[in-house]
Length: 241
Ligand SMILES: [Zn+2]
Image 1 (cartoon, rainbow, N blue to C red):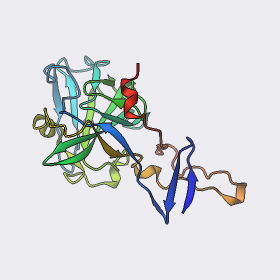
Image 2 (cartoon, protein in one colour):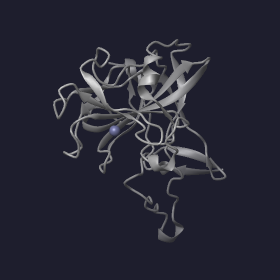
Image 3 (cartoon, rainbow, N blue to C red):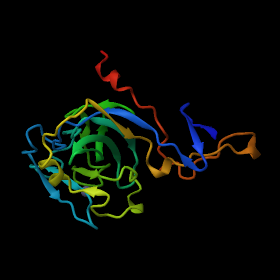
Image 4 (cartoon, rainbow, N blue to C red):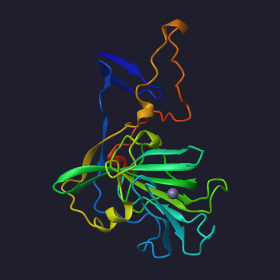
């Protein structure tokens, strides 16, 4: 056993080369909504849908087309915890990923919802958020696109922003609308459930101390893609003033 210290003061025990999986308690989803519009997304349409081995998300556009939806609110589709909230630049722009625990088919399951090309981000990594809470606004990624929300729903909690490393199929993704329409209301067997955190492959393994340079950490191999481990708010913090 050895202990590795992360930049944010978080420490984890290593057994061999396998990282012990961290978990956090999050409020269980009591159902899922669309990420745009308070009223079932009536003022929006899907400009591009979900396709296996193609577009593994949905593009939500305002009914007015063009940039008419620029700055419109984007909502968390369910209760959960923010596991990514950054400007990744490239084709993604500003991205938020929320991790959810939900009860379906007799068991607790997990999913990540991803909101991309955002104009603003209103949440931070580690934040516990509720269904319908604003995570940001619709953007156009610095003019790269007509404003729209690129929205994904993942089964696989490791995808993060390294989508090229994973099959673009139903083993890793849900068809977002098909998922939502059948799960508008879900049973909640307990208020909270454990979800794995810090699961994106670009964060593991962390840089190890380099004995050749006085114990200073090696630089991450890919700083752009590296999402540092973060501290998750305790669930109770949701209810503090
Ligand atoms: Zn898209």
